[in-house]
Every structure is written in structure tokens, then in C-alpha cells.
Image (tube, rainbow over all chains, first blue to last red; front, side, top):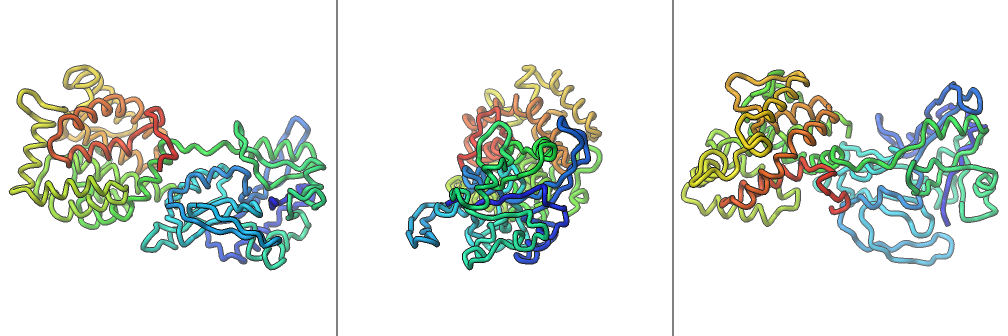
Length: 269
Length: 195
């Protein structure tokens, strides 16, 4: 089974009910978000004038790059297939791809809040909430779960249930008879990263020009886990030590040599 | 975490590393400093290195003097010669205050900074780390990358090796490894998944 979501751009009216429902259901604090709706166009495409929306969320990818980046120690975790009752045990970090339903989930208790997964997500679908920091973390990462606690109770994801235009369809992409699979057969496509194959499981369906605009404007690149982000991750890890250094006055004593100010007064926080 | 928060975190790390490379002085190199330092490297998983340094510090008759002697031998004046002068030009131009130092100062100025009168040469390791802290603070990631690639890593790599090979005290061996860790570029062969 691979849960997936269809976004029918022919139906989406850009009302943001999905984003509000998600925020309300999961108490997502401002300024973070688990899903979003971006307005695209109007602009000229090769297929004519186009204007549409980009309703986005975690793509619960076939090969999620976020999962590999999690530095939390791996532990054994047993997964259960909601339908058959079958179980399997895997070793996972604080985020993983469910072997039975294909959704990508996070264990907040074990999350270190380092942000490595958020940096790795090409869609920007994860965030770290520093307000949830505890003794073992610098915050907690959060993202769309495909509303798995609701789905397990037989409910639709909050964004699907609330969509006034029925533009969101949730289901099993591995089931050829499912509504989502029928959309895929009709041409619904995922926003695959340029130059890579990670298999996004949110799929978009629309007319040629709107799809052209969506893919032109919103096709992401594989996240650059380059030097800046690596430094950011390392700096995030030593943040408490650096805060202590500042509090104790052993930070920034090194000679003020460059004008524009290099003293602690410049350290606004 | 917002980009501004992250940049502030990175900036603080650069400042702390710059501080570590200052001449040891009781004004800043005291118990509080070492507590932060052990915490810093412990968070990064370098517990063994922390234990080694703590042993050297706690076991010394005069830990500060030991570090002053080591700093002088490594970076200022040693017999028969200084081990690792902390100036970029030494490694690139084979002389102090060469073209490389000029290029470094030009880069500072291009970014709107200049040296204070009492400053050391512009390509001194401490100044370069402070400059990186300022760029990070301003969220000038492109500038940070450019400086690291063109004016920092080319000489720091050589300096780093000399300190590792020549250091007697574990403190400086670990500090240069920390600087290496935080300034390493993709071209240096970093593997993102090694954590």
C-alpha cells in the first residue's frame, strides 16, 4: 500500500480551507505550516496564459531524502499493517517511511530538533519548532502525517474533508481501482525533483497550461546539503553551549578588528 | 528555525572558534571557558578529545602557562622555527603580508569592513574567523562561501595539517579540528551522511 493524495487543479479555488483545517486539526503554530497554497501566475506559458495554485504538502516520497539525514540513533520499531494485522520490525531513526502504508512519519520523542531532515526536504515540507525544545533536543520537527491518526479511525485527512471543491482526493496508489489511481491513469503527476527520482506521492492533475505553469514554477531541486546547511546543522547542535558562552562572556572577546562593530553589542540576541 | 536564528548560531560558533585561537589569557581562558569548551565538543561527539584536554589541563602545574608556551611555539616563535604561523600569506605566498593578505583585505573592504588600527595582519586566522562571524550575522551566505573557498580553505588546510602534526598540547590539535569541521567545503570531500 502507498497512500497518496491527488490535487485536482481544475477544482482547486485557492480558498486555503485545507491549510486552515490542517492548522486547526494539529495545532500548527504560526509561522509554521504543514501544508500551503501558493498562487501561480497569471503568466504566459508555452501552452497559453495560465493561472493556478500550488497546494503543497509532504510528498511521502518513495525514496524520502529526509529519512536518510536523520542523525538520531537507530532503534528497533515494530510496524503493524492496519488491514491484515501483519507486523514487521525495522531499525529506524527519528523519522521513517512506514513499510505498510508508505507514509513518512516522525517520532517527536526521539527527534533531536537538528533540522537535518527539514534541510534535506526539497519541498520545504518540514519545520523545526524550537518552542518544543526539551532536555534532549533543540526543538521538534513536524510535518504532514497524511493525518494518519484520523485515517486509522476511518476518517479522511483534515484537508481532504474540508476541501469545499473536492479538489483533494486521498487513497491507495497501489490499488488500481482507487480514485487516486484513476487520476494517475488520467495523467496526474507528482512534482519530481529536477535531476533526481524520489517518487513524490502527492500528484497533481490539471489542464495542460496550468500543469505547465505548476511544473515550471514549483519543480524543486534536490536539497543542497552543502556547506552552509551542514554548518547550520552543526551550529544548531552546539547552540546551547554557545548561548552559555555568550552568557558567561567568553564569546566575542577576540579583538575587535573589523569596523562595523564586532563587540558583543552587535550580538543582538 | 528561521534563517536569521541559524545565522546567529553559526556566527557565534565562528566567534567562539576565533576566541579559542587568541593568545591564552586569564581574562578569558578560565574555568567558565573550559566548561563551555567541553560542552561544545561533547555535543559534537568528541568526548574522548574532551577527556584528553581535561586531563592535560587538570594535571598541569600551571595550565595557562602551558597553553601560552604551546601557543607561542606553534604560532608565534619556536625553536628551530615556528610550527604553524596563523597567516594565510605564509602558505600561499611563502611570505608574511604577501599578495594574499592584500586580497583578503580587499575582500573585507568589498563587504564593507576594514581593519582597526591595532589589528594584526588581515589574513590572521582570528580575523578571518571574526570576518566569517560577521558575514554569517549578516546572512551573507554567498559571501561566506566565497571567502571560505577562495581565501580561507586554501591555506587553512595546510595550516591545519601543520598544527595536527606539530602540537604537543591536545587543546590546539582539537581547536584546529573544530575549525576544520565548521569551515570544510563540499570540495574538501565531506560526506553528508557520515553523521
